[in-house]
Length: 95
Image (cartoon, rainbow, N blue to C red):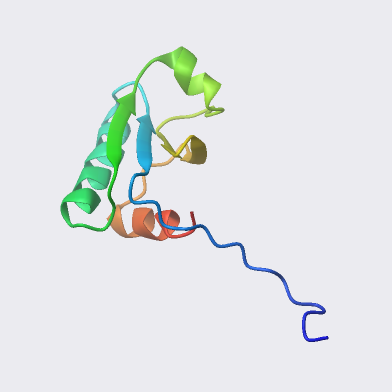
């Protein structure tokens, strides 16, 4: 009876082998996003592989209409922004 009017919070398990892909053609914002991810990895806050995807056909395949964009485990997390380190940490906590 206690479940009525309660929203179920969807939780995503932490994946230590996550694959992070920065989508972008090499602009300054794309490089900043990539560097912020590398910093988080160096600080031990994330694990897994970090790669750059600069092929426009592949970027469109992920559904990103603007760059930079971030894909984690083949799921588009955000596009069109390059969040600073703290905002990036909070965005990654929801996945």
